[in-house]
Length: 349
Image 1 (cartoon, rainbow, N blue to C red):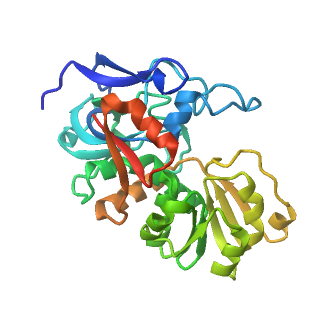
Image 2 (cartoon, rainbow, N blue to C red; image 1 turned 45 degrees about the horizontal axis):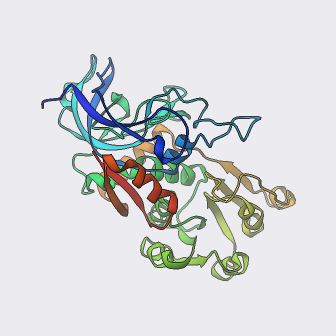
């Protein structure tokens, strides 16, 4: 498989609006020892792309500081965490039989080598990502999904959104037969939560609004609650016994509203702050009911391996809302920021 010497890539050289996304010709990266080179078939967009570009993550002790996911970004940086493609070359110490295989890349950079490691970096943020024709990755982070019935576009949607969703579900210890509440259910992570929780045999209550309600129901929600109306009453009607697990990417006021609706021993898992990062709740609702509030950032290697099993089986069917060419990265990110779509937006280099 011939690999050219240069490739098209979309980089950012500073924090800012969509205008800082620059299409450029750069050298194709060389896979180092223990790495592979992947020709990118599809790369999915995430809120992480917007926030990294804007520098919106803040820092401990300074929530307003311009910062990437885990601190300062080394510019220029190629964005894009979610890659599906084919292995076209290997570095030293890598099994060459990977060449030609269709793969999904685990975008997390972990703190240790173990199966339960924590993600402390992300492709497209702490190392170059998939807004490009080629990308390198550690060989152990590349998962062979050649036999999956999913399309390349669908496979690309999995790593961040479905990885984050599966991490939340695993950390929340969701069991078959339990009742879950999913916030932000029409977004990338939200729709993934609905699909995976349904596949796990849970009763799914999903919060959405307006024109997106039908799509959330189609994804597998048993009850769709309208965000525009009083939520507590709708939740009590749909789940009179209470909720076992809250799967929350919105936070803000929802945490305080939701905790009293948990059953004894319930778990409220937070993996986003679309509704605001300042939260107030009655702490008595926590300790008197043995409830837990759990933070969840992405996934562990164990979670990602479980996700790849689901991909090979076609057990979840990601919804692709739109596909853009690489030279329309700014338009693609603007479309993502409008939040009018259901499912995931991808680019095809």
